[in-house]
Image (cartoon, rainbow, N blue to C red):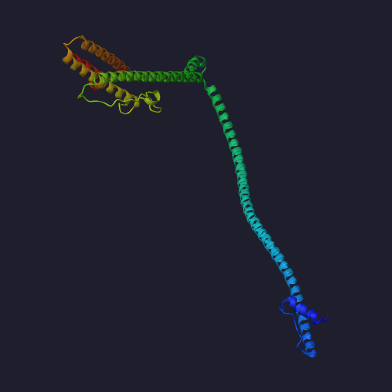
Length: 360
C-alpha cells in the first residue's frame, strides 16, 4: 500500500510527529520521491512495530493470566498437599498409638492366658490334693470307727454283771454335766443382766446430769445474789470469773470409750472435773455471802428488822444450796470414803456452817 504525500502529511500531523504540516516545496522531484520513499518505509516500519507491540502486549497479558492461574493452582495444590501431609501424620500417629495399644493388649492377653493356665494347673493340683486328703481322711475315719467299735465291744465284754447297779450313778453324773440348753439359758441370763446394767448405767448418768444441772442453777442463783448484794461494796475477798458455759450434757460429761472408774480423780474424768468446778464455785459464793452476812450482822445487827429479814432470806438460800450440795455429793460419791474428808465439798460446807455459827 503506497501512501501519497497528502496522506503522509496528514498522518504525521495526526500522530503528532510534527506540529506544522509537512512541506516539500524546496526539493527537487527526485529528492521528493526519495524523501517520500523513506517516509513510507518509516511509516510501514512504525506500523509493523506498533502491531508487533500490540500482539506482544496481548500475548504478555495472556501469559500473565496463565501464570497467575498456574500460581493459584500451584498454591492450591501445595495447600492440599500440606493438608494431606498433616492428615497422613495424624493417621500415622493414630496408627502408632493403635499399634502400641494392640501390643499392650496382646501382652496383657498373653499374661492373662499364662495366669489362667497356671490357675488351672493349681486348681487341678488342689483338686487332686483334696481327693487324696479326703481319701486319707476317709481311711483314717474308717480305722477310727473300727478301733472304736473293737474297743467298745471289748469293754462291753469286760463289764461286770452288776452293771445295773452302777448305771444309775453314771446316769446321775452324766445328768449333772451342763448341757447345751443350760449354756444357752446362762447366755440369755447374762445378756439380760448386761442389758439391765446398761440401762441402770444410762439412768445413773442421766441422774448425774440432772443433779449437775441443778447445781448449775443453784450456782447461777448464788451468783445473782452475790452480784446484787455486793455490787455497791468493794470486797477484798478473792473473786472468780463466772463461767457462763451451760452446755451440760451426757455426751460431754460421760464421753464414749471413757468409763467412770473408781481410780479416776477430779482431774482425769470430765464428770468429776465439772462436779469439782461447780462445787468450788458454789463454795466461793457461799463464802462471800457468809462474809457479807457477818459484816451486816456486825454493822446493822441493832438497827431494825429489815437487815435481819434480808439476813434470814440469805440464810435460807444458803441452807437450800448446802442441802442440794450435800445430796448431790452423797449421791455421786456413794460409799467411797477418802482420807481427805476435810477438803471435800461436805467438809467445806460443815466448815461454812461452823463459821456462820461463830459469826452469829
